[in-house]
Structure formats: C-alpha cells, structure tokens
Length: 369
Image (cartoon, rainbow, N blue to C red; front, top):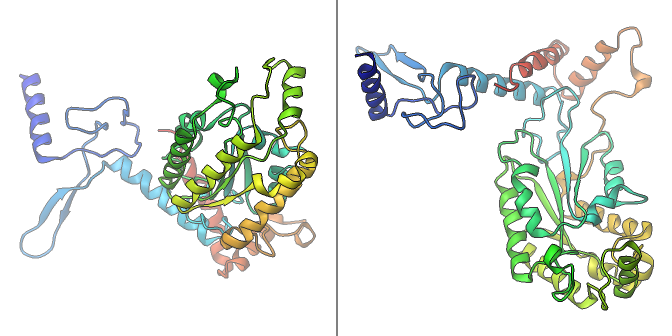
C-alpha cells in the first residue's frame, strides 16, 4: 500500500542517514522532529561527480533551498565586507553586519539600574554612544531591580546564539541588587548568595563566548553605596520600611571583589567601580545607590581607559565615518559620491562599487522562511 511504501522509504532514508540538516528553508519545522531525524521535509540535494571511469553519486547535507539560502548569506557578507560596510578596525567585522550599507557593529550594555540609567546626564552609556559616533551602535539592555540570576534567565533572549550579527563588545554590570542584605525585606526579590552570584557571572561569560563570533566582554563591578542615604531613599519612595538599610558597604564590596575574581578566572577584564569611586562616593552617588552625573562621568573615564588599554581593536579610527562628509557630496548625484567613497576607502576599482546594489536584494531573500 501507499502507507507501507512511504514507511519503507522513511526507514531506508534513516538507515542511509540521508536527510536535510535544515538551516531555515520554507519546509523547515523547527518544532517537529521528523522520522528521518531532521526538521526539514525536503530531500537533501543529490550530486553526481563524473570523474574517471566510474561516476560517483551521493547526497549533500542540506536540501537545495537551504543551500541556496546559505549561499546568499555568504555572498551578501562577502560583498559588504569588501565594500567597507563594516568598520575594518572592529574585532567583529566578519560577523555579518550586512542588513544595509552603513549597518554598524553593536556594543551592548547589559546590567541592572546602574546600566539602565547610563544614558542620563554624563552617563557612561551616552558617553560610549558619543565615543562610537558613526562607528558602532550602542544598545542599552539595563533592567532596574534585576540581579545576576535574572540576567542568566534572559540570556537566550538578549543574546540569542543564532544571532547573525552578535555584538562586538558587551559590558556586564550586575551585583548592586545581588548584594542586598539577607535579613532585608528585599532579599527574596533581589538577593543572590555570593556563590550563586559568581556562578551566574561565569554562566553569562560562557554564554557570550558561544556567540559567533564571540564579543569582547568587560565586567563592571557595582559601585560603593551610602547605606543611610539609600535607606532614606527607600522610605521616601515606599520601597520598604526596614529598620536597617537593606545594603551595606562591606557586603557590596564583597560582591565587587567576587566579580573581579570571577572575571580573572574566565580571562576577562573588569572595571572596579567600587574601589575607584570609594573616596568620593558622597559626590558620586545620587541617592545612596545610583550614580550621580559626576559618578557616571568618572565611570566612563575608567571604561574608556580600559578599552584603550586592553581592547585596541575597539578603539574608533581617526576617520570612522561609514559614508563621506556632506561637504564632499555631489549634490546632483549623491549616489555616485557614495559609491566612489566606498570604493576608494577599500582600495577597490570604482567598477566594483555598484555591487552595493547587489547586497540589498540578496538580503531580501534572507528574511523569515
């Protein structure tokens, strides 16, 4: 019967290990594992090699639609890199920044409220965005109240491993909430034991290293606190009415030290805000816990120093612009000016520059299956 023949066909295909290892064609169903062992219903592409007296035949790993999609992705990446659509001095230059000409590498700021507020006055997030002006896009992923356990739970969403354009640089700043006092009413919501905190930091580092290509990572410790000032803030905002401050300077320092140790163990750099801001914490804190403009300014200085000293590939070039200055444009034909600029910048012949128009149609075919 037809059903018997179909089952026998499935059994034969499985025995031969012949099925598509799908990469995202229209026949892919990632939620269902087919009897053949894959998730794609297409047969893999068959090939025949006519060499010698006896032709050889076999199957490739993927079906024809999957292979076509992968080839389009390779071509788009190749052309965009050749034509300078990605700043050449970035470590992540080969990570597939090919959506449109001028699409830039990403810098991701991952952390708690210290990070969330970093785009405020003199914040290190805003300052980094200015530092990477026309070189990279600085993206904020800061979450007020979150601790490192929450961060681990978010990793697959914030840093998906199949992201074709992962960030080239990530800052990780958690610990201010993890260090809440164990006897505080906030402990159940925000607290995290130091052993779990260290494990979480290492889990974050390991996850980031699985990105392709992996980014440069910079840990940032929690800053020092002013317990009495923070207690007054908590009462004024109705967070809680504990008789004692929910954080202490010594405990926060313990977590800052734990982060530095963890960073060293996984081979990553760490900016020690706790000790760097200790002497001026009255000036550097706005409410006893969060940074003031002066505190953010000093934090940025420390971060930039670390970038310059330890991540030379992440230092913007003297001329980071991905397109020419407006004064040099041919106002009657700006497209010509753009193409000539890109070609000259990459030392390519002008005839190659029109390939810029080839990338976009390719990428249109690389959308959702």
